[in-house]
Image (cartoon, rainbow over all chains, first blue to last red; front, top):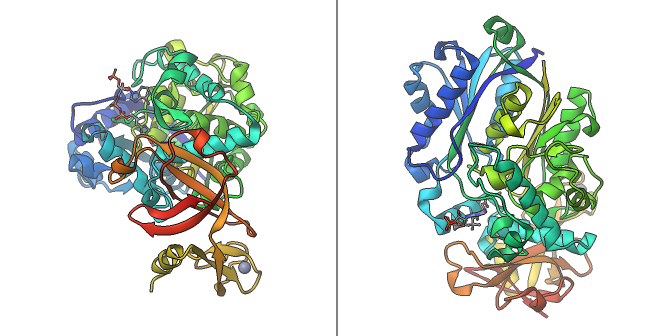
Length: 384
Length: 121
Ligand SMILES: CC(C)(COP(=O)(O)OP(=O)(O)OC[C@H]1O[C@@H](n2cnc3c(N)ncnc32)[C@H](O)[C@@H]1OP(=O)(O)O)[C@@H](O)C(=O)NCCC(=O)NCCS
Ligand SMILES: [Zn+2]
């Protein structure tokens, strides 16, 4: 297998964006190409992740992007895996470089939905559930994670304030990220007093609906060395699945796909959870970050809230969780998120993360899933 | 009748149609086509009473399209009595967590535009 490297990375700002989906896809891709110091002609193919292109009247975005980059003859593939689309697309690109099929790939994720309004987005996101059992019975995504939150509170005797602390911590980090959607500090009271969306989750327990695009250049080590510039190595890649509906899981307070993906990524990287310096995890809701940090092996099951309470997941503590602000504060343009996490890791490990830099970080992890964790990918990166 | 139609017709009678693996005995919801435990395709239909206890739930105040007129309502995951299976569905008339403690006995009572309907026993 070839060693696989990230040679460049770029993102648009996340938030409510005015430009079209094709424009923001292009802006992030151009930023990644320039960051890598390559020409579009060096790119062999592209992997584009997107879920609701239909909302901005553009599906099959790949060829549109390639045409704008002056490489219309190059192949592209558009991938949908709900909120996990970005990491799944990254994984497919990774596998193709590792196998030696391609030397240099463009991996771009994008979403543009905020113009459709709360009802449209709530309705369409629910199509990512196991619709016959969940969406059809009125479950929204906040509702499904709220069901996990209630199960967690029941099993481990925790409170809503415990979840609120995750939001406060991620907003603290997001304030330091100029590209974040929600750049404001919040307090536990702000979270507790915000409107209920799906009990026990309130507005500030939820990630926002966001527009945005993120892009990375993935290449073989040989290509990275020839082209110079900063790069990081992807040393582990793992995937896993879970029963699509919550009802089908042995435990509703754990996400099986995360455990499977993490185990195989750690094994490939030859590390354990203890070796990870910081992680971008899928905190679509505060409960999700708690569950993720346990399933990834950073804390024992049921101890995730205690870790947050003790500040052990804050920036530059035991393990910095979501230094970017996470989905909660940085925002969650669903097709872009998994790629955006890699952008953050690249920026962190190449000294471009500014005020939110995790000190002396060598190993960063990304964790991104689709729906309630029905599909998941974990990647481990190392500075060179 | 398709499998989903069979689930719907049985839910209207308060029943849950399940698939029991003829090789290993593992019990699945009837939308399973292969056994999760042993990979076998042989199933026998087992009709269970749709009664159980609330395993978890949420009360939704920001609903998807079509559910505005029912808001607030609960989305419920019901653990069936006498089996390890769980089934989710819609429960109307729930406004605060005090209305529905985890463990509340509940049952399947129907199926309509709100999917499988679950009510307190
Ligand atoms: C919580 C939610 C229902 C709010 O709906 P919305 O359409 O974003 O709400 P609005 O745009 O009307 O925003 C209302 C206000 O709340 C703020 N806001 C919106 N979402 C917010 C969030 N998640 N956290 C903090 N503030 C938020 C907005 O900035 C706005 O403030 P303003 O009036 O001062 O500008 C929606 O963001 C949501 O469902 N989030 C979860 C998304 C999801 O499920 N993703 C998939 C995960 S798997
Ligand atoms: Zn079997």
